Image 1 (spheres, one colour):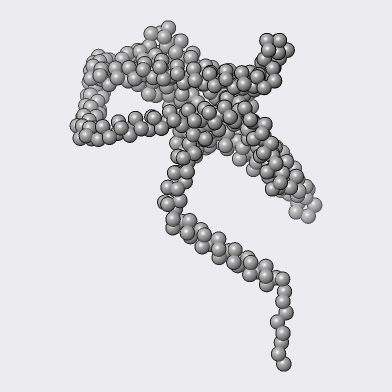
Image 2 (image 1 turned 90 degrees about the vertical axis):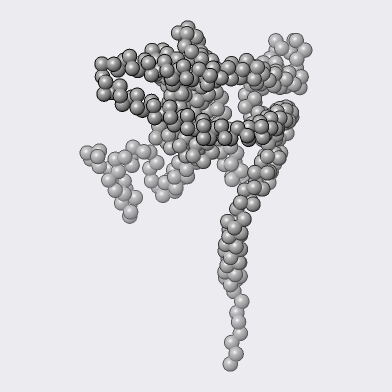
Length: 414
């Protein structure tokens, strides 16, 4: 007797699942096999869209200033000066872009030439600095001949290695300097083009930010459910607050530290005051490791000229960083970074390893967002299981009864 096949929906589900698994496996294999081509295509897309990326970054950084100026120009006092409505926004955007151009112009015309002059002086006078440093060491170590001999040998080895690098690596490669210079000029022109188009894009985005925001919200609420869309929107608001608070606070904090460093170094008549202050200000943007990264090369530059002033500079930097870490930084940044020092160090090392300098700067706010999202998921799951969410309970936890869900704490607290 023939048995008839009975159709069951579970066979369809199994078939679809098997098809999706096989398709995903094939797709994953193709991605791995063509990874270099995909990376090259991605790099090309990023290069093409670089002006728009610059525009997004500039618009995001200028948004707080534009909002503040627009609010100022919309005040009753300004309305009497015939600045109202959309003219207040136009005026705010124009002033914000002028501030950006003034900062860029000052950096290019005032700071860069002095930085170049300082670096050129260091290179030209390096033999004299080397001799002055060795003479100073020999004078200080003349009563300790064994230490003097060891230091002299170390300096001689270092000098020979530097000469070897110059003679065997730098000089033979001088033939490619022209092509490198041409490439550098082309890159500079490309950067200027990206900046100009980026400024135009940022003006458009700042002027039409409500339209862009409304369009994004339409797409968000059309694709996701209301509950999911609200969660995504809240997450984006928190991300924006974290990034904007951290970046604006860090930039302001670093500018203040660089200015203080310049004023004090000028009063103390330190060599290469501007160069050292720029190094200290720029590296201070990097949390945790920034002060050390900036202090080491700056102290070495001053050491080449005057060892005593180098010691004074090191003491000053230690005092300045203590003031920044305990007074200036907390006042500006507030509670933007809501993680302890271990995770700050972890995020900087990981971000720097993956994305170099930009990763070291953005690693902390990115980790704060991810850490907060993961903490929210953990607390949600604990609430679903009717368990406490506070850290103190789990610090003193002995065990949890699986049947009654009763939490038992250790009496001695260990």
